[in-house]
Image (cartoon, rainbow, N blue to C red; front, side, top):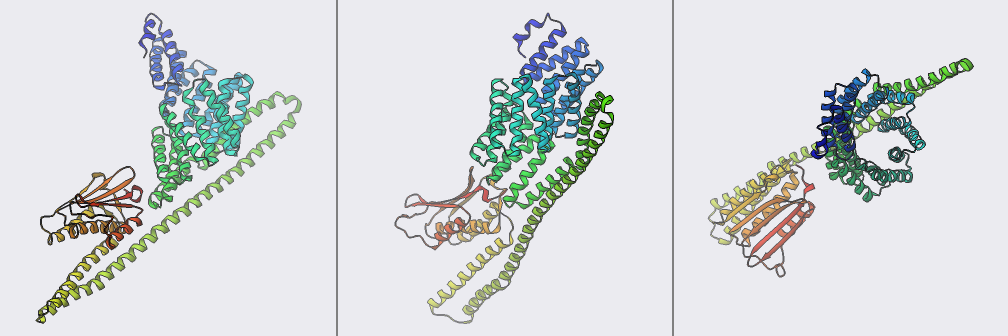
Length: 622
């Protein structure tokens, strides 16, 4: 707290100190919510000293507001309900209405739309009774926010417009700014993009003029959504990022989650699925922090779509299930029906008051009108429920179709794996046995006949050696076909096996194979594993056979974009401008290109040969 500001309060009464702290808390709520919270705590302490119910209700209300600004919604509800208890105790009608509205805001932020509307309509009834135009307009705007969250855009526009017209009537600069932002948001859903953009810019300028820095991010989000809808993605991305940063700056976890969800969906449209997953995960984290279950469900939807596009079908299936369960909880028929019953009750009470005022003149006519109105509302409600049910069924069928596609893809992969196993078994049993027979036959020929022709003996030995090498190559191929996932550790072991055999021919050779620790968890398919193994094997083979190297180092590392494999020897090297590269190097390039990688070969006669291979990170999954 500011010691200089409160130094003169020592001689003041608890009531005066309480009001000072609460005024400070209100003044700082839009610019420094954490400091506002500290002032509100001091105000509550002083209010308890006074034992004044009116001051206690004000202190609890202020504390509830600061928790709302900090998006600590459970705490906000607790303190606003405490304020309501004191206001009901002292019959503070306007204060009761304020508490109803604040409780509605907290429920709205949690995604509890039924309770939010219940308290908003209670507040609206009180404000209209008191003829308080400013707070009537505020509550109308809040009701519009709930209907917008439920995608009831026509109703949302109706309440936003009523709020805007009321603020215009009383010339409220703040109210016009807020409802301009609301209208800018809702008009997006009617594809009135130019009008939406105009309203949103008015709202942005209004908040900046009023120095409400916390709220500037909201119209920026609307501007981002407009550009998103127009597929002007560069401008959309810029505004999304700016909005997210502002919400994070002011610790508005709910809106960070909300805007991250919108940005994630926009990135999915652009085919930037990895970035989409990053922002969807961020949305999920912030939504959980603030108990905003509706936003969690939206994040699951974005994650399911992104993973599906990246062919990560298991993850897509997992998040799709979470999304469907969330939708069932949020939009079950009982909740929807209850929401409309709250609205119907409010509208019917208002109509009843009008009927009482003119009952003596047109009682019979009004009774008939009321009956017809109730019938119309019932028919409309039934029709809406039927439409809603069909819409949900359609969404479920679409999800089921996507899941069936994912399952079919998985089944196809399983069948391919079974075929690979069958082929590898045939290779081992047939070709492997035949190669072994060739080796055995050559050995038998050597023992059965006295071969004096040295050239013939060399040829037989060459055939035997070649056949043994072919068997080893065949075993490597069968290993790759039978292995669903290969790690760099697996490759290390197989390369070491190759090196041990090479040492039989080349003595005193030093060989190292280093893998960065974070790469130990990375796995890839058998085909990619075989390609990497063959490339490294060919490079090591060349170092041993041609470079006459005594030291060979293999290092596998990772940076922000690539996995990097580097094979370095201290051999005699060669001049790349004068030497014609053979089939081995060509095959290495071909294998690397098939994995969307790049290969660079540097060699000279003094420093040996260095082969550097880059594979993009997205080629592998952890």
